Image (cartoon, rainbow, N blue to C red; front, side, top):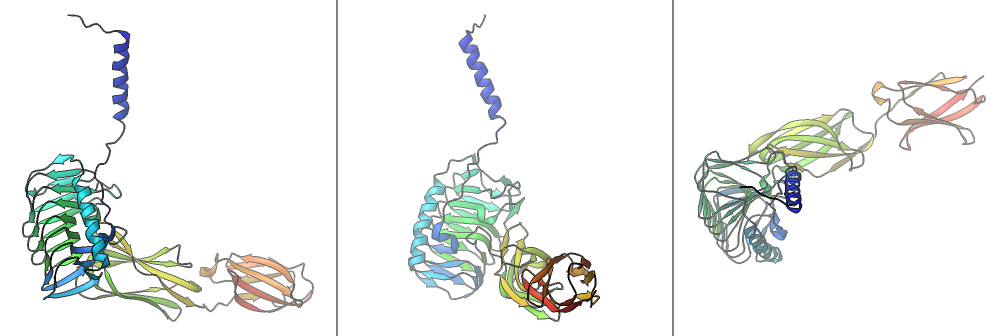
Length: 422
């Protein structure tokens, strides 16, 4: 049998092959998406309708509360960051925004259907919508791989309840962020004792966190009671960064010719290090030093370091805090003003056809400027000082008395009287 093709068919086949070839060079479209959480983004544990209960001693970073239900706290809460909202304007807005986010997540098209249990070393990569068509269990360790794609999102949609077994964990690798993981759960959620859970859960049912659960993200319910039991709950800030170290104080003070910068934390969550940064204008910062954090801790830690070459005049400092997953947050900016004691040596005095000005080695290239005035206040010479020893020609200055000023950024550092003699 012979297959006969006319010219139009041949053209169509060639066009199809050409398009397929071109498309093969383009990456797959990312379907996973983050919902707009609105007012609910600041909450770490919340229910729109139901009771809020906290038993035992809990450490909580983020807002908590209920929009319609009892607020029962027979245990204690160390509220490292955030506020309590019960049936107020904030909780009302959050309840509405949670419902909108839940609907959005449920509308996403599935890329991959998973079986249960989750975990047991399974690796999920970001940028996909994963679905489980029944109730789900998390066992062992589930690994979420961000593949070093900035801001990559994970969506896991579960058509049923979600439970995590005791000691189960979720591990983030290659830039994955807890604040970019979203769980849509059509049912209740129970997190097993001593488990570590990562991501924002939006559930259509009650949420129960058993003893010693660590949550990195959010647990939000449309309808059902929520309960914390001796837990550590770490929410996300408005920039999608996991709240980590609680600073008790951060200050700077002069110690001799140095500036001592000190800070203390009440607790830390996966805190890898602090980077002390400095600025002359509170806008552009430079790194001064890096100090190791305390990882995970609920005890007070004190830190201190010296700026041994401080800026003259106003200086501003802040802390850049980096966790083990690469998430970054910043402290408040603090300022301090000091006046360095400068002594610039001018010689000879009286001077002839030239004058020399010496600076300390570490003061060279600091934008110092020499200005010389006659007794009438007329500016006769302007010269930048860029070397440790600056030799300046003065043959155009006639004999007589002069006054000099050395300034930086138009701030006078040193001034005095000099004499020209021929």
